[in-house]
Length: 274
Image 1: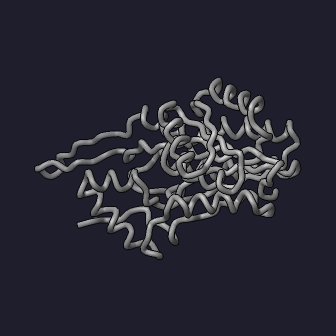
Image 2 (image 1 turned 120 degrees about the vertical axis):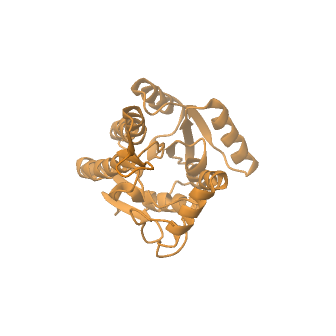
Image 3 (image 1 turned 90 degrees about the vertical axis):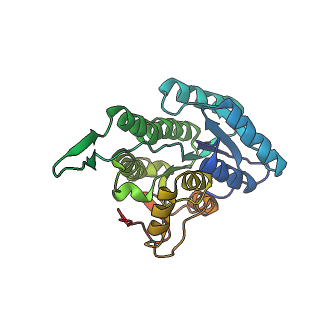
């Protein structure tokens, strides 16, 4: 697959494109010449991203969709089929981390006095549905669209460095490991049709969410600073680092079934502070 050229546009869909990393990926792809469509659940946020991009001289298109709802995903792809050029790139970026420890333990004043708090089932299901089931639902329709149109496209799934396991992130780590497994499976199933599947695995992203949480919690800020000291490059990745990697995965027709790690050299599964 080559880069889009004038007069022959192809569509790039970015889920979770109404904020943060998804919006950064979308703007980068639009600058490269893609007909870029962002989707998300908030009409207000989607409109804001389209306006902000326009102020930068970048054109984004938007469709409201909930990736966890099969009917909403179906409606999304029906609209794309009616109003956009053929789909050639699908970026499964939508996600959210609502994990807890499997069983939280708070030690009491007396030896053996412990307060136990099991991981809530609802947050497990919420995380897995958004981060894994949503990828399945969107990836399924994206592959169907590419097969129907005969488009040699690529599905890029956003994973995470914590897919190998991370303290306090049972649901998120499991979901992202599942995303990488889906990526390898789809590469095998779809390769004969010229459709590729690639995962991009960010480490900690130095974005608004990280800065906001660190500003609100000195304890969290201290932990993240200690964690950064264990990253080989001693730095977080930027949203632009991820966006350029997604674009690279789209351009390089020899890449499929692999995980591109953009994490500064890797994260430890746990860091003890203090």
